[in-house]
Image (cartoon, rainbow, N blue to C red; front, side):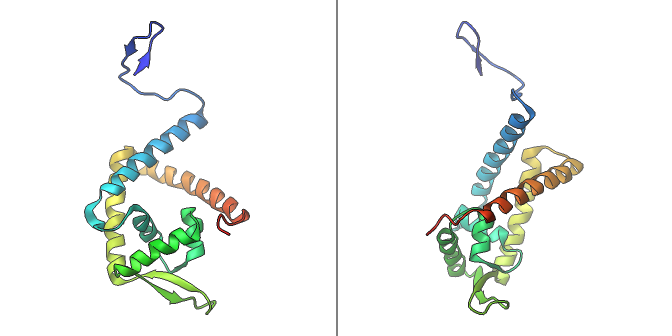
Length: 165
């Protein structure tokens, strides 16, 4: 809804974000994130798990250190550790010694965790396609571009000091 010069509401039937291509891209990505976050929160497949635990579960395609997970999720390590504790309590993940550094631990999924993660991935992919309305070719292009953005952002995050002291 917009206001006309007489301050009366005017309904617009076709919402088109004004501004530069950068602004349009930002608004499109934010709208997608908000809708996907809402859809993710409504998934009943992970009863008892919060969004953070679900996001963490989605990142465990292979065993990962807490610091790496914190970087990927752009959160402080203590927050990720708390979510990892919850995954362990639910029997979805476990901590194992890092084969490269015996002092460190990695978080890895159990069979139950892999099964839940696969179910979540399928549902998230389905909801993504429904929400974004892109065809397969556009999704591939979007994935390539957002992957490039993510790589740049995560690369920049590695250059900054930790948020936790």
